[in-house]
Image (cartoon, rainbow, N blue to C red):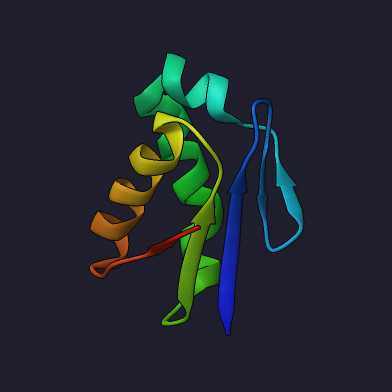
Length: 77
């Protein structure tokens, strides 16, 4: 299974589930926003693949922190 994380300006979708933290908030308050997102999704991922889509620096910022937490690489679209 592959999990999809799509970053929009005002929210993120994780496998179709909306998380009310988006690109704008991630780029404004990186530490708090990323921690909340990771706490919400990491336990749902397990050993499955992850693909992150979106634009801007938030995509790469979230991707790097997610890689650190999972201990493996994620893909980007």
